[in-house]
Amino acid sequence: MPVVRDLRVLLRLRDFRRLLSVRLLSQGADGVYQIALATYVVFSPEKQTSPTAIASAMAVLLLPYSLVGPFAGVLLDRWRRRQVFLYGNLLRAVMAVATAVLMVASVPDWLFYLSALCVTAVNRFILAGLSAALPRVVDAERLVMANSVSPTAGTLAATAGGGLALAVRLVVADTDAAVVLLAALLYLSAALASLTMRPELLGPDQAMLRPRLRAALVGTARDLVSGIRHLAGPERREAAWALFAMTLMRFCYGALLVMVLMLCRYALSSGPDEGLRLLGVALALSGAGFLAAAVVTPWAAGRLGPRRWIAVCAAAAAILEPALGLPFATAPMLIAAFVLGLTTQGAKISTDTIVQSCVDDAFRGRIFSVYDVLFNVAFVGAAAVAALMLPPDGRSTVLVITVAVVYAVVATFMFRFDARRIGSTSE
Image 1 (cartoon, rainbow, N blue to C red):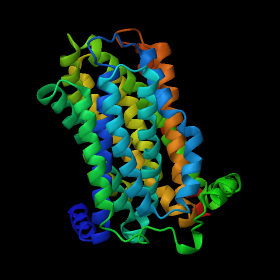
Image 2 (cartoon, rainbow, N blue to C red; image 1 turned 180 degrees about the vertical axis):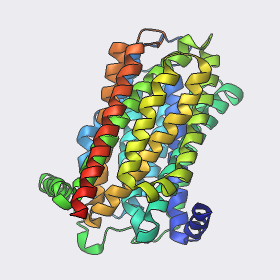
Image 3 (cartoon, rainbow, N blue to C red; image 1 turned 90 degrees about the horizontal axis):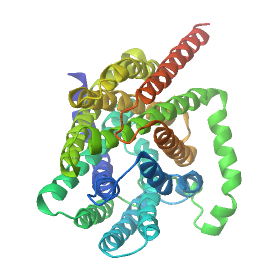
């Protein structure tokens, strides 16, 4: 199979393998840490969780990155990306240990959220840096395949980390603090893995480095404006519209995630432990969808083009999401987890490829940080909308239909945009 052949060639690239190992360990730790937070906030027996509480937690942890994210991109275009992976993961390991201590101590909730905020803040630098560094370790011909393997493998690692966290929580240790300590160990491993690469390997080029932090911060506004102008140029319009479409799909994913959390906690389970097990199955099936996207997307995007493949993914979600979601039953919900994993990751792989192909290397750090900001704002906005629509048990026909309409809008828009691009090219 062409996919298998290309994958074998890709994995023979030493620098790609090393960068991939950093991603797998780092995002695996993210999965462990995030599930630990979710179980602490949502599934603790002593807590009566509501959609509003989940939305509030997401806002506290994610919304500040609407301000931090652009600064992360400017700094990423000046700092060596290898060093970001090293020191960023070391810092997260320390802060994860602090989170575990706060979980077992009698402290105000705001201290716990502040610690979690620090861990996830560094994540903005790590993820944006991983995406910006990818073209430095593979050639242009295999960039689509690399975008299929690397981010999808990272998502699978996060899913596996979430499954490991659930297993530890349910079988080994009946405490969320122990799970957070496991995340700290994985963050430390990611930092050590980054040492296998040369500091200058991942860029940016020496000419772009500005080592003084004060100079970097003073020039933030100017550099951000230049980055946005770069993205807004006519030759990069495709990247801008792909980011817009992916942001809407991220909104849909966030709203459905809040609904699934509430369904697992109340409507489809008899207690927190059963709800955790059901959530674990849903995560596993969603991970299987991510894996399927990694296999299917290079072939589909190659035949249809990345733009049209995004449209197909959105159209499939628009049809299947209400069909599987409206029964509010366990089996259809689990099938929907697989479908949404496939369509969401398939669209993301294509979006990453479009952005990396259209954006110059010197601007990639800034653009991918803006990409992350859009993700966070869409996710928090989706949680807020879900909090308004969802009843206490998580069943909301209005939310399911609203999400389907948004998917349909994305599909329609991307099909029309693709048709216009093809028409203008043929003229």
